[in-house]
Length: 378
Image (tube, rainbow, N blue to C red):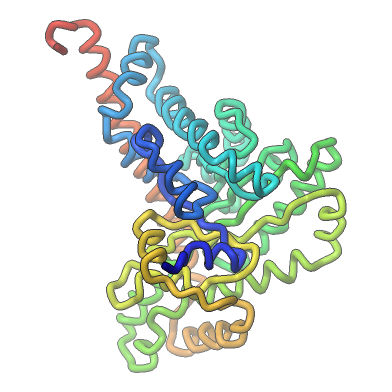
C-alpha cells in the first residue's frame, strides 16, 4: 500500500494540521496523526478556536474553575486556548526533537483586533510565549503593515514566529526582510539563533476564490481560461523570491551563526470549488523546505489519492509569470485582489474572535450559575 504522505514528506514538504481542539487532545487523535500520518506541526487561528470552544462539554471542568476564580472573558479564552496549545506542543515534542527544532511546532495567534497595533502585538506575543512556555511554540502575527515591525521585535526577543495572512509577493518580501532584521537583532541581543524558528504563511485558495470571481464577472473566454491558475502561480513566485533571499549574503551570515531559514508555509489549501481536484494545492506546490498546513479532510484525501510528482514549483516560474501577465491583460487588478484579501482576512478573524468571546461569556455565566445553584445544575 502506497504511503503517499511519506512520499510527500520525502520531497521536503512538512505536513501540518490546520486544526486543534480539546477533543483531539483527550481522544489521542492528534498523537495518532503524528504517529500514523507523518503530521509534524499544528496551526490554529481564531476561527479554529471559536469552533473548538463551542463544544462546551469538552471545556466544562476548566470553565467551572475559571468562573469560580472570577476571571475576565479575555483571560478565560487565553487560559483555555493556551492550555490546548501547551498540550499540543507536548504531543508534537517528539517531532520537534527529531528535527532539531525545525518541525514539531504549534502556533497560537495574537488577538486579531490588534492587527494594526505594533506595540500591543509585541506585548501579547511575549505574554503568550510566557503563558504556553514551550520551546516548540510559534506566535502567529499577521503580515499587516503594523505587523511587520512587530515580527521583527518579537524575533529580536528570541521568540519564534509564524507570520500569517500573506497574499502578495511585495508583502512577502517585506516579511522576509522583517525576519532577517529580527534575527540580526536577536543575535545582537545574545540569543541563540538555532533556537528561533519561523514560517511565513502564504495563503493559497483564497486567491483563486477572489480572482475567479472577478474572471467570471469579466466573462470572456480568455478570462474563463485563467480560472484556478492565480493561486498556484502566486505561490510559485513566492518560492522563487524565497530562493533569492535565502541564497543571498545577508542570510548566509545569519546561517553561519546557527540560524534556520524562515520556511514558506502554504496555508488555506482546501479547495473552495468543486471544479478543482481536492488535493491540487498540495500536489502543485511541492518543493524542498516548505510546509503545507491542511485541514484533516485534505490530509485524508492526500493519503488516499494524492499524487507526489516531485518538485512541482521551481521549474514553473516562467509559466507563473505568464499567468499574471494574462490576468492583467483581461483586466484583473491583482494589487486590488490582495488588498481585499488582507482586509477580509483580518475581518474574518476579528469576527471569529468576537464570536469566541461571546460564546465563552455565556459559558462562564452558565458555569457560575451552576456553581451558585448546584441542585439546579444537577
